[in-house]
Length: 156
Image 1 (cartoon, rainbow, N blue to C red):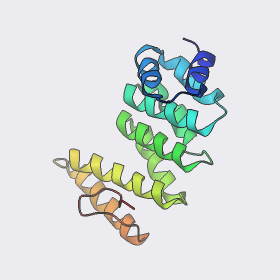
Image 2: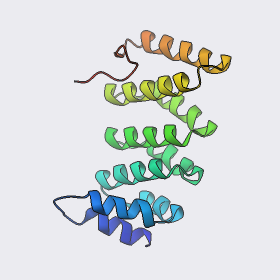
Image 3: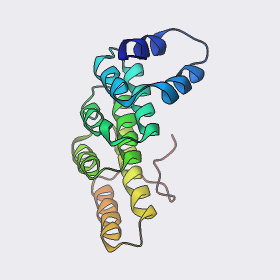
Image 4: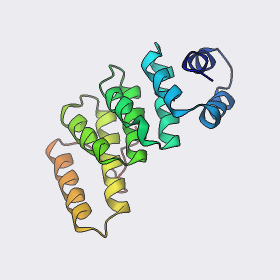
């Protein structure tokens, strides 16, 4: 399955896209998914491809996902951020924090903070991760962003 075929599958109208997404997730090679993200012309297709790359968790995708953080469409940025958090590469963490500093969408900001908090809680035994949690909470307070008691973004 090449990039063009992946894009065509995702952009073909269907009442239920889940079987198609499942097929692509299971069968498509990471390099082909990366090219598909770069070549896709619709935001929904790029969003779905970012989600698929996150599920696959391959570090080869970090660069294209970091680029997707610069998308004009907030849903694509949010999916890219989630995918990067799932992959967990150090380069991704730095890119996520940089995006948080300039992000205008409250929804994406909340998602970025939630992802940082989730990562910090998952590794809270480490002093460095504990400091990251403290810094993230401070950044959240400074920007007056809403966080629920569980650490996730608010449900609107």
